[in-house]
Image (cartoon, rainbow, N blue to C red; front, top):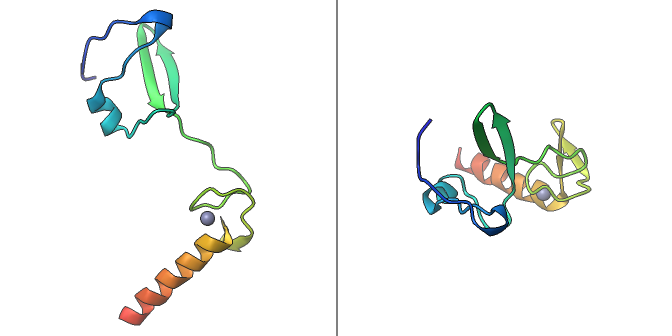
Length: 92
Ligand SMILES: [Zn+2]
């Protein structure tokens, strides 16, 4: 485990996460962290949304309508994927 910084806890229990960590883990305002406790350690991990059953596997738009190879796609992402496949095939 690598020590990055010592930070005081502020008012209301707030903690500022150093910029180097925010950039490394692509944390932005509104990003959600999962907080774990392991003995005396407190571990923060970027929250990963569980895959939603009816969402597009590319853009996560709700109510995707096309199933290709067992994956759900919205119409827009399916069209983009088709264009990419056609472009790749033309280059062969
Ligand atoms: Zn999509």
